[in-house]
Image (cartoon, rainbow, N blue to C red; front, side, top):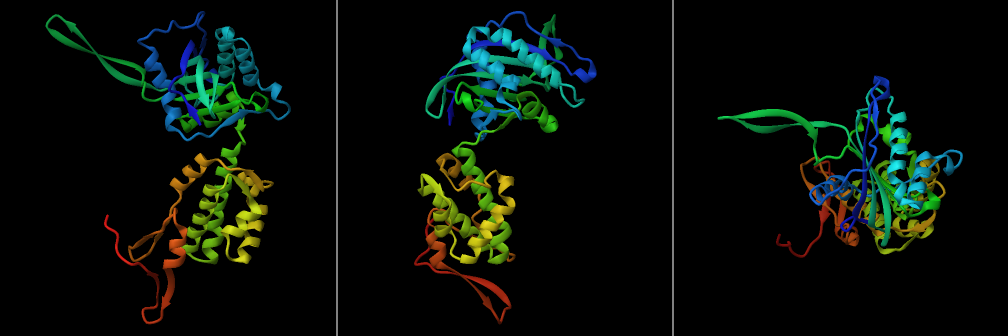
Length: 352
């Protein structure tokens, strides 16, 4: 979890990169930008707002051979070792970005490199490097009085409500490639920023493992439990799965299966499904790991707990109290109507 409320921008360098395939130039500022009290709050909102609104999926610098061959990792090491060098290193970072800007779809734009202090991550206060890029320009109107007439002037500039690309590199978990957050609002060149410029992989911490395992369970419920049982059992399997994660600090796969799956045949199906699909979710060898509560809460919000019927009726099951659906909802078949039915037991209707 991050908290940027008290974060301060200590230094800001602004450069511009063009598109190499269109023979556009690169512009490097000789000196850092002079920050002032008027521009500071606007920049903080422009840079940080997308990270407050976005789900926290962390990355880390990576390389196929050795982490020391990752240019952005080395640039980060240089800055964190000597924060006063950030402007000179920001030029190297911008040149590195320019070298990756050779696809026709890539837009030219301004690059902002910042040194950030008082950043909170996982209850640790650390420094960070912020790298941001603005690409898409917005039209806006300026007005000027000329004699007795108000003239309208059409200009272009940056929309401060939308950052196009950005990353926060935290001075945290250095040996693993630093912990990194990144955003990319423009999906037409997704590989350019994440893979070519930053060269990152997903950071495989408890948050990553919890999310991946729950996503795996969700797909197992849809592809195996639903065809083998019914919609109610699909929902109830995920209901029990989420509640197992919610009430435990550590995940242990054998305990999970014994607690969540009633049908012994489905346990063997689960294990076979993991052998076939585990690599896709990066959980093929995962049997024990710490559970991230925030990831469980995020997953719960996204999971559907509704049985939708073709008679335009919906039955909503409770994720908090799964035993209610087990005890008070029954499924059957009506021979006379040749239709399935759900029988729901209750004492009284609740007032909304």
